[in-house]
Image (cartoon, rainbow, N blue to C red; front, side, top):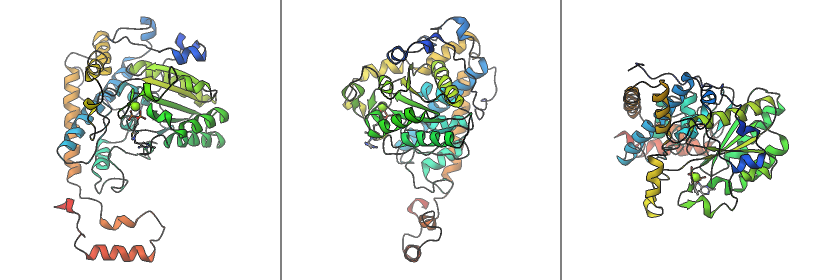
Length: 397
Ligand SMILES: Cc1ncc(C[n+]2csc(CCOP(=O)(O)OP(=O)(O)O)c2C)c(N)n1
Ligand SMILES: [Mg+2]
């Protein structure tokens, strides 16, 4: 084993190569094309010289971030099945899209996620303990148990809480970017994520219009995982590609193999650098596949052919592609994948043990944060609650 411990991912590597010929195509060709750095077997889809521009430290950091999501998601789903948390939505199979994007962000940027980007937060420094506290809604949860699981936030690392209402977050990302521009904050940008289904929502069109007109420093990223719960993209999008929609708003579109972490890193790095220079927004479609269920409440075998899913789980798996590259190039030693997985698994289990021991938020917090001083009727209702039989949460027994 070449490395004894998991490398830190707190400081995202942001210097990515961007000078690939794909970026010189005209906008329509970019929106109809599919940018790739790696073929599915982990071999170069670009010249070996171009591939060499991704250094080993960056590749290792991306791989570790992807592995962390895969291990964490599997444990959290098990926790949900055991009734220890109420809900979970995995990003399994989408790790390249998530971490390839995160690794192109800088600490001063702001991340406005959709459902499957918790790994961006984790990559930027959201701790496992805080993530799990928020999933359990315990007394250590920064949102005091008021959010659904899988809606994490982390102010310190500029990771905004996700909105359950699909796509309402996209205008927020554009608004943050507009504020950055108005306040003269150069060298930073906002990332706004959405799903393929999310692009059917009016909010996305409002956001794209403002971003285009105001030349906001925003990177809009659509994880096209080809499903919106049980609705396939093909029955809710008449455009040939989702990226083409950006053209109508005067925004540069990119379309990228979302299971190719290096292509995602390069494309998002290109868009972020452009935004930080003051050259406006980019819309990026990342083509991937939701190999998991929509959430712990869903059974996809009832509405889709899981034989197709199996192909995405095996030969199109984004981790397999990076691992093949790492073993070929030598930045991933033989046995290191197993050692990292075991270490990450232990980290997650330890954090679960610590967080399950934390009691729920005190009942009195129920009236916090609405008024500077709680009103008389809220105080009266709280007193009544505390005097009653439910003064102790059932979860404490
Ligand atoms: C405004 C709104 N409509 C419907 C829903 C129910 N809903 C939750 S997730 C989802 C599908 C989202 O699909 P997509 O945007 O592709 O994201 P994915 O789940 O595939 O990551 C829907 C319809 C919702 N939460 N909000
Ligand atoms: Mg989707």
